[in-house]
Image (cartoon, rainbow, N blue to C red):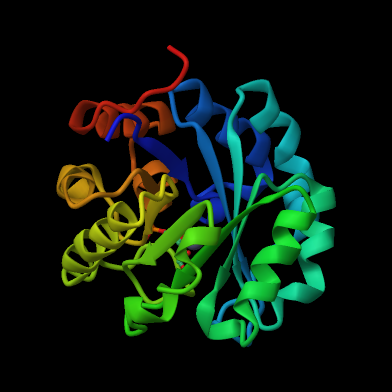
Length: 228
Ligand code: DX5
Ligand code: ZN
């Protein structure tokens, strides 16, 4: 796998100084900005929307970083245009929220945004089989979505490896992103299973160390490539 990307989840950032916090992570070498959108229906928590995407977009642009928006909301098709306008580069929807997943993926692409799909820990990979050839990113949830700071579900590693085999079998170059409970200590195993994008919230924005130190701890474990 040529390039591994680190995607700090701003869910664990300090919202009173969001721009500076995101900038610290990007300056240290992270190259995605992961935005967790929750609606209090599909998941129990309520978080943020297009306004925050719009706010972080200029910071991401300054570093050439990808604005990666994870929609944990019911009927996401209602908001795709708003998130595209706000500056999302990737819009990822849950298969559990999209009865017409192909239509939703096409709608994302028509907005000029890269489509991603994701699924909860208990949702089988078979639900993705038909859509895989048409997406640019597949996200494996390694926690039940809703909150930062949860523990990595260890069975996810085998699921990542199975998805890697499915992608390789169709010659897909889609990113394989993993989200939830990722720390420097488990990052290498997740990459070895086939991941190309690692989301990390609490391990980057939480704890006593600086954001730069936390990003560097990941870089020591992986060889995260940015434009350095
Ligand atoms: C969970 C979110 C994750 C979360 C990751 O529903 O999708 O992106 O913020 O946080 P950590 O890295 O703390 O598990
Ligand atoms: Zn997420």
